Image (cartoon, rainbow, N blue to C red; front, side, top):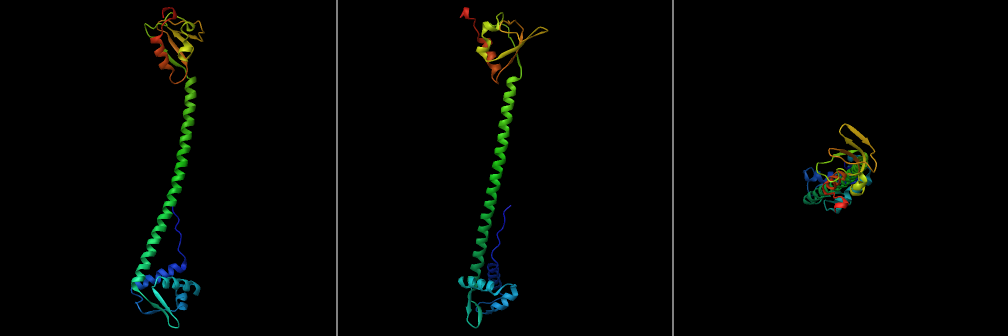
Length: 213
């Protein structure tokens, strides 16, 4: 939320006096109260009133006359002063709002970056976990690896997968070793990266025994 910066007291008094002129309380050419009376009315020091009157004098709204007080110089200038002040306040408010929004934007960006870091961290954990999660694939009929051993097919070299078990009928062969063989209907359990299944399927379709190559 933006924080509004209050205008100095003398400026508020000058604006109030200009507003009273615009509202017809003080007529153009007429004399308004002296500085002492204005200081009493606004409950401020004479110095604050002096600064307020000087501001109105600079804007040609009033004309202080020696010995006869303060006179209204121009109604139009009073209107212009009020309008100018309102425009400045609008710009100041907009600047304050933009500053607050930029701060919020930075906070949101930091939050988003933090969430992204967490997503990446979780993704890395899941990726590492998937490498250790066994995947299963059935040897299709007609595959050239049927009847051959893990060593014969250079299974790991060609697929990057490590065979941890082979399911054959109702039996489960744990850690079959390099001389474990493949038979029709076997289901092999492997561990590897996220693309290992696609590589194994492609390998089983395209494998050609070396002696037949």
